[in-house]
Length: 124
Image (cartoon, rainbow, N blue to C red; front, top):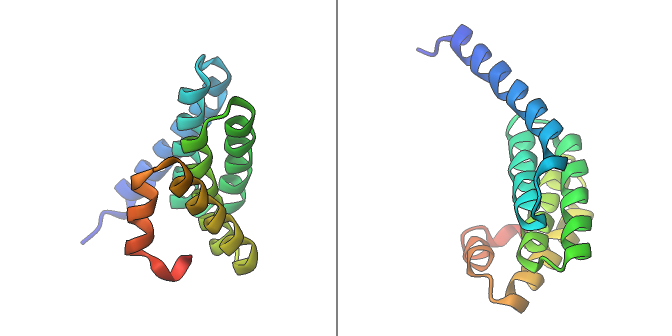
């Protein structure tokens, strides 16, 4: 059986860690690292069932990636953006974001996202 108290405590600890990470993101010097941190935060927000927060973070990831010409970060940001939109029941927008992410991945030879598409073809 699950220990509900331990799960709740872990969830609260994770949420507190995300809040602290959000405070520290502006201090991350390299755009590549900042983008990666934001991606991890967005994925965590999705896991916490906070798709609106994930969507806001992926917007930030995509803006940063486009401004700094970080194609891989943009592809991953678009993919997560699409996932957040799916959770929010916005399939048309989700399909467009996922397709853009996959196109970006193919354009730069980003294998990870292309392999993910093979595992989840119904989302593209």
